Image (cartoon, rainbow, N blue to C red; front, side, top):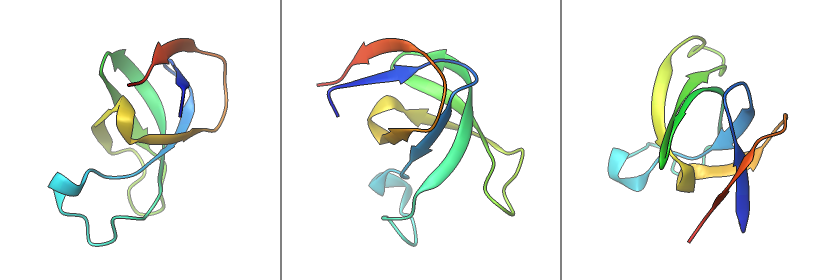
Length: 76
């Protein structure tokens, strides 16, 4: 993904890192960005059963932006 738009209030789709040993590494998670501190951001989950939980994720985990304008962060 060339560049990503990342800012507070934006809905994102992401995957867990393999180092977190997910049961299903291909599962897509959905959340709203709460804070941005490159190269990570804090996300409030909106997945059923996980609503309201916060998680720190790296920009590289983001696979899609669901909504909202943002500022551009180049990816490697």
